Length: 230
Image (cartoon, rainbow, N blue to C red; front, side):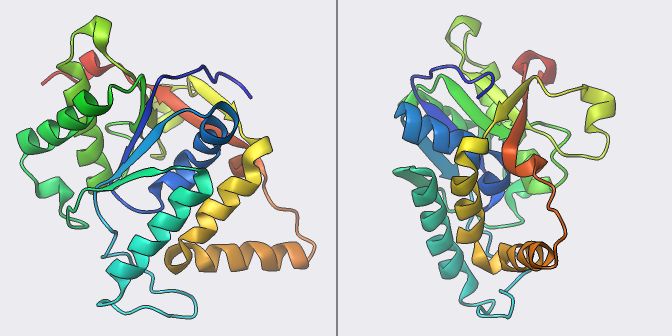
């Protein structure tokens, strides 16, 4: 396990169910199950506009929000998270929320929980508009905290030009010990990830070796909030 330091409290902030599965599931599983670190996951939406309805389809546009709610709860349980907050924003509209309102929501969470570390997306390198809006709000809320009192922020970045512009990630966590927990978290979001799991299992059955990198390592950039001052 590389670069994992003990933490007082961790806060995860993402806009959609399953964002956490690919970004932090192994790291958080380690913190919860090996270090017993308190973790709160604040998920802004239920991902009710998700493009997938299961494979084969088992959801409808009407039933998808409740299905994804249950999937999110199952994913949190797979990581050992007991404090799951569903903030009730509407999927694909986070980018249109008032900026100050969003910053205040994040500031209230931070003030309540007093985390020493926050996981979110890295502003400018998170691709989806809801990802970007979430990251901006978190980083701005932290920027307004006196420097000596700020939690550290780890950002997940996956835009095509990430390496070119940001360089190598500052933090690389070897999660091979928690790989099963990460896979279980991904599988929990069956409406969105079922097809991916099926394809991976089919390739494995056909003798094609799977790329293990994304299942063994999670990578983060340390965010300096002052670089994003308005």
